[in-house]
Length: 198
Image (tube, rainbow, N blue to C red):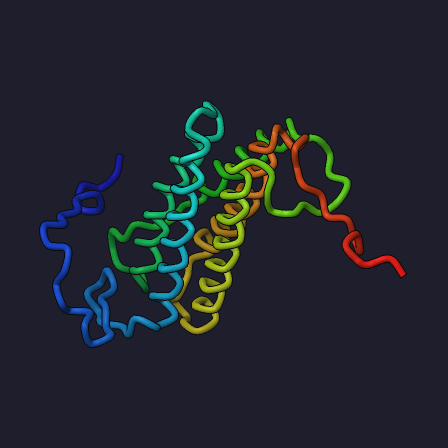
């Protein structure tokens, strides 16, 4: 069961004016510029979450895929809290190995029902697949931001946080294929296929 101190959130006032000077505060209360690598890292995670929320507008009827995405959205708030709390703060919410393992199991579950790939895939097909491909690319960008943070700060990022984002982009890929009629409606890349004939 989650620690109550980690789950209690009060948002009574939306604007505080504290960010007007270009600063924000981490979960520890420490101020950081809004362009700081740590703020960029958890901002990228937030963007990924928003993209998944948009994708879910198209996956609500899928009894397997949509609950997976709902769990991921919750995990991404955990990951944002993890990244917003540097160091070894007691009681800090962290991504744990079981969350990564769950993603791996879900990747395997979806992938087992997909048609084999014969080419790279162009983002598209169904609306759900297109949205999931967008979420995949935004997740990859978030991952790049988190790896940059890890390179800049010795206590920057846990190994599980990095693993989670890496697996998540893989899940978005297989989820997009799943949403494209289990891969049957994938849009395949034709190398050189748009070159004018000479």
